[in-house]
Image (tube, rainbow, N blue to C red; front, side, top):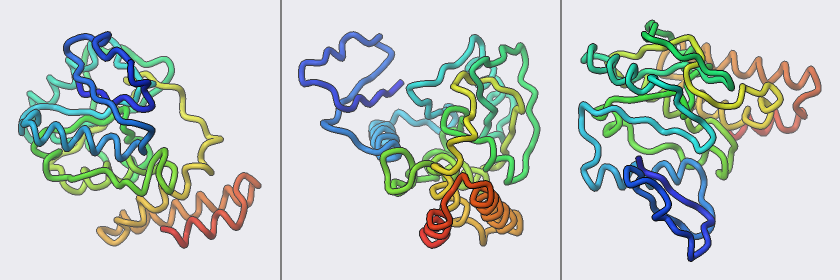
Length: 231
């Protein structure tokens, strides 16, 4: 595991971590996307990414229940076409003996894929490039960086599967955060709206979601218009 530490005091003891965690530090703070890109570049430059290995991007507030990583690894090993797998998350994740997964359409990727829950085969990772550093916590627009990355993965992967169960531990989705993350997610979807009819449909759907937030008084009209302009 590669772990990037931010805002650490100079005398912070990184030796306190287990030897299977490789740590690095940065002065101050960088955006979530920039942090992921730094670790991704390091992994590729140091030949830590192999075409058949499996990779994920867990946040510091998520956890993997017992047996999940073994199940994910087995799913990739048993299907050489599989390059992108994801699931749901929740504060009480399920522990399963066998993954139940199905192919998905684009909207399911947009609605459910997150950095905590997606896994990729190495040969896909090397071709996807960076997370968009204009998106995500600490960037110009909050949120959307994992959605944009997942959309690219969906269009590029030979096969994508989704397990419609909360298999990764994380705080439950909070509907109150939708206005905060709307601009970033709208831009993520907008970037790919011309790639297919489903992409255009997803963009229009997101515009309607934002309009509903305005009508319900959960988003200011100015913020909605600003999000559309920045998309």
